[in-house]
Length: 159
Image (cartoon, rainbow, N blue to C red; front, side):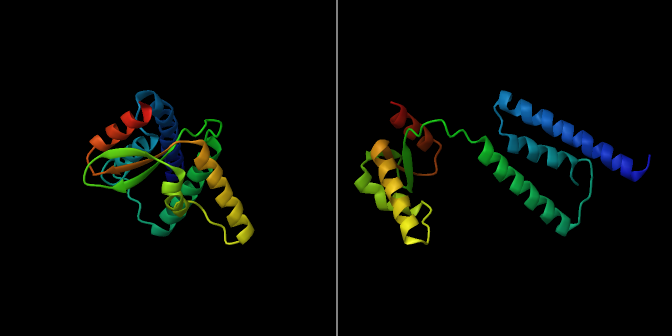
């Protein structure tokens, strides 16, 4: 079999396997990224032994893949789901979560928001943030690196 046919057959098989893995990953509760990383490891140099040492092509393909991922993520985001709250994270010695007021965390929240350079647009963005923080609950989670922090926050925010 000629190398071009073999490459197309291998690429098509890999693409088919990736589509099937993507569709089944949701059902088994594993993130699709983990599945794709595993597929990449299986067909890479340590798996099937496919060598790839063209770094320029790898960068180009990676950039194209990242653009597709970001574009797809933007289109697939469900914006009809209402925002139920915002949780601001801080490193702490113990795990605790407290509900805070907009005045307590407004400046901290603005730090994480996009701030346009144009004064008029920046003022509009600030007004949107003010309106947002008046309409939803705000939480501050102080936590260490233990998995228990996630449980503490979930229990506090969901009652």
